[in-house]
Length: 193
Length: 306
Image (cartoon, each protein chain N blue to C red):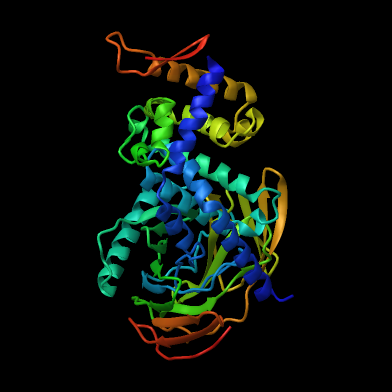
């Protein structure tokens, strides 16, 4: 097989990889940086990097997992550079929940309210905390897998996740005047106002 | 309760992600992720990364020679420590030359050049610059300041160079392509052969590295090891003469590997020509070069292909 043919094959493989993974990477990126434009930029940079390393990435057992790791690290690096956004992320690009087709059904279950509050609260987390939650609860990765991606120990993942969840609980706790926050998490489960 | 919070969190994340407009993903899928990196003149690049596209860019170079001195006296095979004054002085000279070159080509847009790699060998400082869309290298020393820039798109490329100097001849010597064995470490590499009458021929090689590479040693065709400056994803080295590097020893935390570097026959430019240009035709890879007089150098033209 000529070098040219091998190159073309590798390129076609990469294009299939992009077609299969771009949406997933974008979702993960968006949930991490909370801004669609920034997420697109990060995924684009991620895929450029993967393209440059494709000769090696293509031989990996899970190229998509590697791409996700690159993306997460890019997002965290980006957050460091723009740390002023850590505590006050731009929520304007958040997808409008009101437009969801199943809004009515969800509303009947109180889900829209809960989801909206949670999304707002997620935006207040530190990037690394949000990354841990996204990887654990959106990507459904194990603590060990999250630790590998974040380059830390499983214990650190546990503590980061725990602190993030605690912060969400605090953010979602009812305010004194009542009526603003919609949900309280107690040992007995969630209670709606 | 934690389980309920976790369940609601999954729901919130899922709903939030599902609301991303579909055209955002389409935009990402439509991008060509194999653009040719614009590179440095007077040379054409062949990426060592498998699948790297052969594309083109515009390259201009200027070589300004100073007074006569022993050829590259003080050059060392390993990078040396640089004083702040040396790198500052080199950067000032290079930035001035880059500005002149941009004005000459009519491409000045005010974008600052950022140094991405610096290599110091005795009194000589070689700096690799980027400005977002273009690359540049600048070699400065007691006897010369040589600047080259490169930019282009994947679709088409023309490579051209020009040189002027106070010596009795200076400028482009030849264009080379470096193809690696495709192993890990060096993502892409390019080599340039330049010539100046005051100091003679010299060869510059640079490239991009995988993130885990900590060192690169180039093995020249005469067997001499040339230690490159490596860091921040780049490596760069140069040496007097026109010998090519035949392999690179790449150091990573996992050990040292050797990558073979293949430099095809070069399309020669006239010796001592002050300016020249090359076009690389994608996808054939054929390279056509021509030289013309410039500055005080001699003129001429030639054509070759690789």
